[in-house]
Length: 144
Image (cartoon, rainbow, N blue to C red; front, side):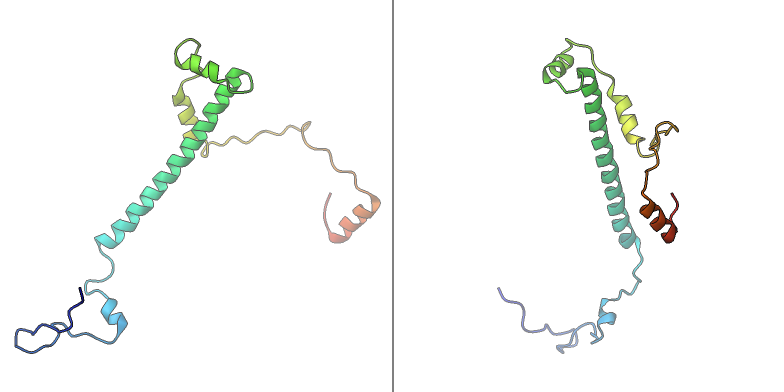
């Protein structure tokens, strides 16, 4: 149960360690071949690749589920009806749309995020400020 307390004898009959040890910690921890090799590069690279794939998969699946729920909600008239959903799945009602389009939309959602066009009529009107506020803004150098 305990560890070995004695050192085995070396080939010449003396009880010395086969490799000389140094009191220097850096010398004990360094490798003879260097720190860069296939194992030290591939393990972090594989971990990074798996993390990136997991991130893309989770973002895509969450976005696809949201888009799918939104399409079903719109087809049911504002709120998801589980009865209508069951009838759709068993072929008694017409299906909403194919899921391939939803997956493609979800996958490309970050890349092609559409920015809403703001018309001149939809912009918020400027705020009416009191004389004190206008004077304070001029003193601070802010534009209206």
